[in-house]
Image (cartoon, rainbow, N blue to C red; front, side):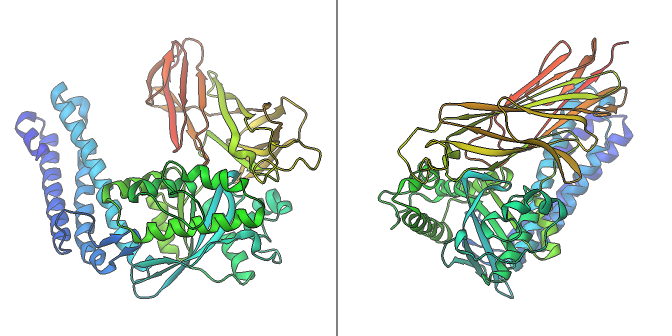
Length: 543
């Protein structure tokens, strides 16, 4: 309707008139298809079609809506593509604004309906329509960071049958027997083989790439006799807390007070490690996890809040799903739910891997600062400094803080730091503020700066990785553009991150991403990212 309203105002711009008319027609057809698709489900506008609770969804309702959703996605997608062909620069100011707004809204709505269409084809089989499914639930503890987020502390079986999802129990991953080495990619074997990635369940997720870690975990589970699964669901305490905010407090036999969105993260990542010993701690965590999951799978949630929580968790990596079915996995990737690790051309990706026998990582404060100097030949000279400050208390001894054995004090903590670099990075140097283990490795076809950071309570340590990347800035018409792909690791708390880009002397910034502050030939960005961010600056060289 908005696009049609613009038509009389454009006048002599025949191409724009024809394009808007066709786009309005296709958008209208898409809207009619969407309405028809939802009508056949009997949806009244309340809740979500076919959703009884987060653990009970009627696949037949979803299947009934699928044709209409697909037709709507096609119509809106075509309309959005048509409007993108209009050269806004040829339109007068007010019309250009309206068309730009229409383009933005159509693109957003087309993407939303396309997602719904993809889900309508994906969910029924994954929810066990036609044949039951079993998924390995991999529950991570973020006090001990690992590639995909946290230490794989507990596992269970999510059983899906005819739209109903149940969880049998949660068991310590340390109870899974050690198996003969399973097949893993060469870079995973080279980097993490000495730490048991090929033989032990709790070490299966050193790789930050969820599909890779999923295949490793499934192979170990089958070899150890745990079972054969149709996929893996990766979650952590941040995800559970997000969902608890949509269903309310939970009473658990494993904890003396109600569990809420406000206290669950602290309980599972800190307080349970202060109990008497490993047996008591594991028992409490398993019971809490089972009770919370049971409520989440059975208690109705407010639909909008629930959908927002799921969206937030997937974008931040606190929920990721892997399917052994290639077609389903491809759709999960399109939806951004697969947790794939894609560092980008100029990445700022720092992965923490715990290297201590306690859970004092709960108190780790992390900072990341990257300074980049671009020269006239588009080469980037980059220095990235990672700072770890240990804010742990000095006692009492516990699973959380350690027992003071091994020559380290109570509260000591350390981690291996992986800084991913551009494929063409050269002249790489890794150094630390205190003598430590450093090196340059490789993964995902690119160099990785490695260092080990450690600190007693109240102390701190830094690791700085420097390198040069030729051709890091790329031509953008008559200008140049430099982009940094910020890829945060799922964590208890976001790491404050800063980027400073110094352009060639006399360069003029003509555009930049939101949040970038420009002062002369220097651009700065600061944030606490929990989702991937694309930080960029476009500039013209001095005449």
